[in-house]
Image 1 (cartoon, rainbow, N blue to C red):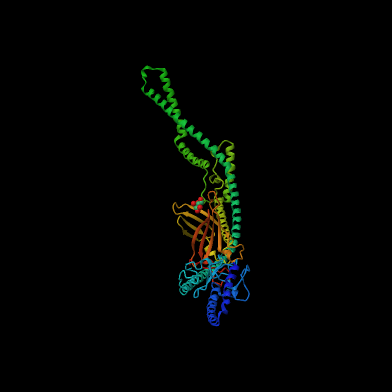
Image 2 (image 1 turned 90 degrees about the horizontal axis):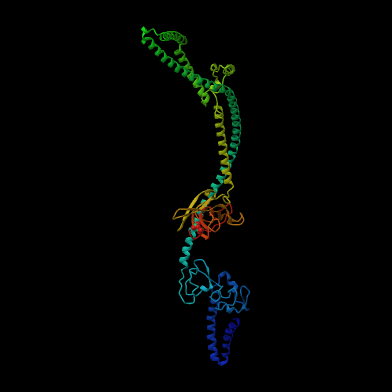
Length: 547
Ligand code: MAN
């Protein structure tokens, strides 16, 4: 190919061999050649520099020696630049034509911003949007208008809008940072206060445990005091039951006697006295004797009055006995502690009862205070109050510990270089796509909900920041990963990566499933907006076109 170019250049040189044909023709020809050379030189210069950025023109300077490809892959005559024939491996000899597949054409785009398009798009009959000046279509296949003034105007307007939203985003971000700082200070103060409160709460629990132990000890003592009389009371109850059944038996016998007496009375009144039956007379005499004795005996024992007293006694004792069987859980309002005098009397009564029981006179035992106040373990007023008090102290301690754990877990979260994400902790956002509604609760979890049956699938829980390897890299706080979501059938556990982009508003911008059960989300947030005045050297985010 290099030879081809040399050959072209040889043909031009042969033209000079015609000069010796005549002075007239020589003069005429000289004038024509001079004129042609002038036009050709200016065309050549234009062509040679076509598609080259102003800043790169020095690389294409015309020298006496051959021109060297920018990658050094070949030496070619200067005229071979932009001659529509590709000589250099890097395509650098054809910046203004489509001859090299790997070349780039530079559009000046005056009034807008310059741009490069791939060489194959030069003179392809299409106006490239990147070349608003139409310079890529100089071949004549199509006339492309120069729109750069208008395009540049729109572009500058767009840039101003971007700058405005970026500045607004950065302003909000500064508020977030302020919020994060205050929150950290508040939490620090809360933590210090809670730690002091925890010490006091622990001390309270310790004291109340001791009080409960004392109350339980006192209760045990009370129970011991009541155990012995209770045994006696149970024996007494059995005796009373026996007495009752004997009373019933006596009543029955009285009834029988009354029946017999009535028979004898009838016999006495109705028998025929004229018969002088000795057996009848003897029976009537026996009846009279018995009746006299029976009535005397009944008068002496005054059975009705005795019965009444007995019955009253029985009732009283029954009540006491019932209390024995089901000892009362005495009211917390009752006075619990016996006075010294009461204790002495109780002790005397117990001793007296022991003696009476040992000689078989159980019915004459006396009830004691401790009997009336018998206690079920764990139910005495002292124990109940002490236990309640301990429970409430333990609850307070637990509550304080929970609050401390909560704060510590928040402290352990990385809210960004300047705590700019603290404000968004736990905030949830949704994004509806065709089939699913995705939601993201920042620093927590992310889900995919079916728009058909509303079933919800966990896509993962917050793991860490992944914007860059190092935390010092400004990009570090631009991406998060949520992992260990519900396992994909025949696949991995679901996971989601979020990329944050600057915007004054918090919103999920897009979600896609890049691989099966691996999701990518773009979220807009002011938390990553900076305007160059950042004191924390955060990354300067480019606001994306969607703004
Ligand atoms: C559900 C969704 C999809 C996922 C498949 C995998 O349909 O979670 O995003 O690709 O399960 O089976």
